Image (cartoon, rainbow, N blue to C red; front, side, top):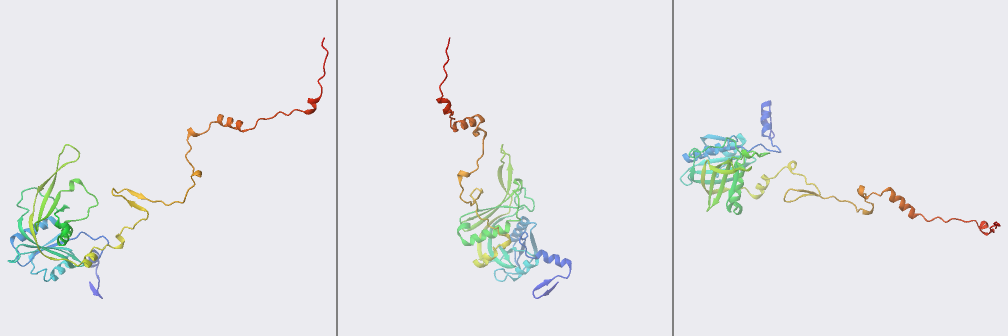
Length: 321
């Protein structure tokens, strides 16, 4: 591939296909996550990264080697790996005396860091420590957020948006009841964030609707919020902008109520109801006999004309014997 005036031109068909996959699209592909650890990483952090990678498969890339970098001070290496692997989400794990068992969740916009949130792991239960059946790989999870902080505090709002973007998975066009197996529950309480992972089990209930039970399958985290790097409001708004081709065109005189019923308004000219053509029913039709009688009543009675000369002539008398 050659680069002229900032435009990369492919030389082979393979490089052309590679650039076509990386080119901007109206509907982007599923976001990929890169998971890496820093120069110093404890056993807890290493195992936590592996468990989150198992939840994110197959839309994740796990780096096993250590990467000596500090994202909050210099994010150049993260942006380089993001562009190399075409990943828009990242998870960085590190451990030091000042910030032990550290996890950094972040996302990219145009291969530059948009948001970063640093969370400290206070308590961790691994996926292998809970001896229950697990969900299959690639299962799309259901996300549940509990706590007022996710609706009131600005940092928790951004963290909620980041976690939704991180764990949401591919977009589903249809939902199958048996496919709703995995539940991720996040609770914000007393300055801490509790993350729990459950397997949804459908039991017999004696009716058509099954009875639902939740069984914890791991991993389990007790997290505390540390440092944050949040994008400005203008950049955050720019990252959420949709192309015009995807925006639904508004149709005039059409509205929907809260139940989704569609209403349409039709504009018409003023009508003369006297000339309105109505439906003719058999019961309202006139019979033939009634029509003849009405015609006879409508006509005037005929007057018999008598000749005046015949009336004045005398009647001859005859003798009777």
